[in-house]
Length: 243
Ligand code: BTN
Image (cartoon, rainbow, N blue to C red):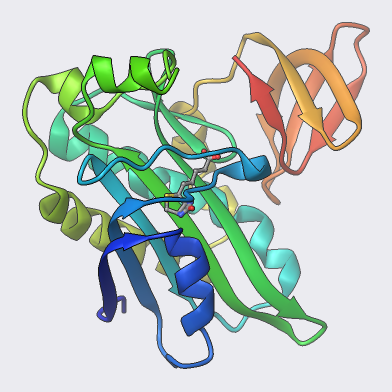
């Protein structure tokens, strides 16, 4: 499925480069770079992408689906990343809905999903994934990322980026196939088990809406149900959650 790759040593952002190739490449493809000078996270936050310290990549997928289906895409992708870290590197980690992977209370991976769509449906998904592999504590301290960690910091072993990439591509291919063919309800129990946000009072922000509450469930369409301190129920499609 994902057998075409563009590999660079330095780019501004793999996300930007990936978008520039969408019309040129008909199939699915991957863009990776050793280093990004303008890596960006959700909400346009800066994403530190030191040379050869992590996997900085964007995956372009060309599905033929209605736009409504996209509401569960991130859930399937989260599971793919979570299971590679847990099963192949033996590190306990959890999904922080909707777009992050945490080890304890430290972030090891963040991803963001953009798409090109119109009334006919979704033409391209551009999923940018950043995974911290080999940063040291000092390197995180220097860029003020006290809430970040790397796989190497967690298990003490140097991580081979290409080995990680191979495992991740395989996991993403499987989960993407499920995303296209199975309802989210089929993997919901597993997703909930691998999520970290249950039973915690947290601050949820989506656009202008901000509430303090506890996540209690996830809907079959991927929306998160949160109960606020006054007992009201809220549905979030995507939110910024302060841990
Ligand atoms: C987040 O946690 O807010 C998402 C971070 C996404 C970072 C990745 S690294 C590869 C791709 N290129 C970018 O500029 N961003 C994504």
